[in-house]
Image 1 (tube, rainbow, N blue to C red):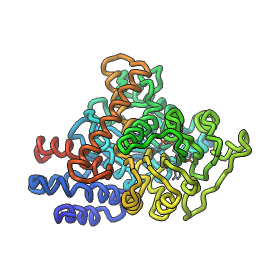
Image 2 (image 1 turned 90 degrees about the vertical axis):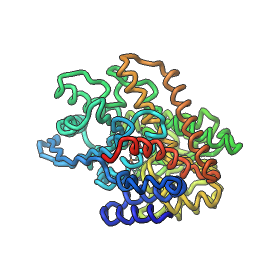
Image 3 (image 1 turned 90 degrees about the horizontal axis):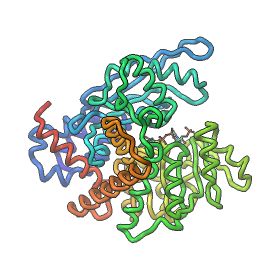
Image 4 (image 1 turned 60 degrees about the vertical axis):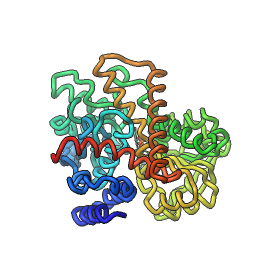
Length: 450
Ligand code: NDP
């Protein structure tokens, strides 16, 4: 690591002692930027990295709401507007009890590079709340979303900051959020949120975009290494939006998806997962993955145990797609996966692999599709939704899907070309970080010290 990078990292650690996820995300990026930072002494002269790691703005606010028993509940809301140098802030909203400032900042920081990689004019942001949607009634979800938007509306706008969904925020929540925004503003500003329903400004293929995009990236990465998805035994962590559509596209590509999970455990169906049943359980009934066994008694259910490798990663597979949450794969899990013969790992979730595990995969020649690049299909299609809203047009599913495929193919190309340029072999993690960083760094240099 260069002295400059090391000193910036030290300062980040000192200034944010309680933000372990944020420090992890910054470390992972900065450690890979050495080759480009060494070529550009002007970065240090203008404190570019110091500026890059400090959010332009963090908004934290109170979200009071009434539960079904008439009791007042209070949650904490966030919006982190990290870097707007290449476009309006863009990034999802996460509703999950684990949400805190560190998690919001790590997600917003990653989003800067991801959005840059898409080639579209969008800056990095993220938001959410420690609200837990699990077990809440529809009315409670609606009242929470309305209260959340009462404050958030002051800080967003189609040319300023455009939120979307993430964990715990899907079509239903975006609908309630959009309704409240429209009521407060007394205007139909469709481009202020993405992930909307098709009836009110949403884009076809947005729902599928992150999972499909992940598989387009995987296809390109495997192709560059003379491998095909066809026949590959695949396991997927998660059974939410990203996991479901990654499973669908992987199956269409000829892979055999044998396991999916939720936070309690995983189902392992050696005949291949019945995805229609998973969609029914998760998208319609909102039940636990364990219920899969009612229709498929021959499948196995394996429960997660506190402090142990999540069950889904103990299953032997050629391709593993972590599509649930951050820090799911540590060194111990990576070692087990390598022992089980994994060929490729595709990060659908954000930061699912910790730094030690990343390095272990790279050392053992496991092809790793890094989240910033591989899961950028969601935000890219969100940007396509914004374009359609601005033009007051709606593209067909095929049109959007084709554009998504082209974007993901280009993202892989950028990662590979950058890895080649800097002699990094198949380290697409560093390739993605450097390629995403370059455009943002140029824009920040051009715009002066602000
Ligand atoms: P969903 O809420 O639709 O699904 C999340 C899934 O992950 C669920 O199966 C959930 O299980 C599981 N999960 C969540 N938290 C944990 C945890 N702490 N431990 C184990 N499992 C957990 O979210 P998405 O599919 O939208 O998001 C999944 C990941 O993909 C996240 O990292 C997100 O940031 C990332 N992502 C999402 C994008 C999108 O377009 N939606 C775009 C780019 C990245 P349970 O129901 O039990 O909680």
